Image (cartoon, rainbow, N blue to C red; front, side):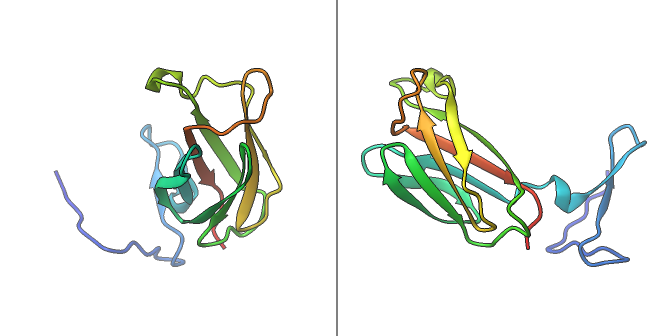
Length: 138
């Protein structure tokens, strides 16, 4: 088995152009397109805090269950994709089962605003709010 040890990958034809081949060998993809550009695990109850993150500058608590998330490095446009999960409860099994879920809106290249809502559509603070951001960094 071969091993490559490096601190940086640079494309041959363009610096950001690193192509990988699919497992089956018939498709290719640009490496940077398949990498999450930001993630967040946030505690939205009591003393709000970021538990773990990548490319996250801050979270602003706008009121009950209403947060603005700001990235350290901006995206190239506001059409990026966000995936979210979370919830509130007394056991880990209750997380991610809260409906209708997170209402995502008001995106800019460097931030987005979202509300957490329960299965009765009541906006509320969640114990765990997790985000993943996919798209192109500026």
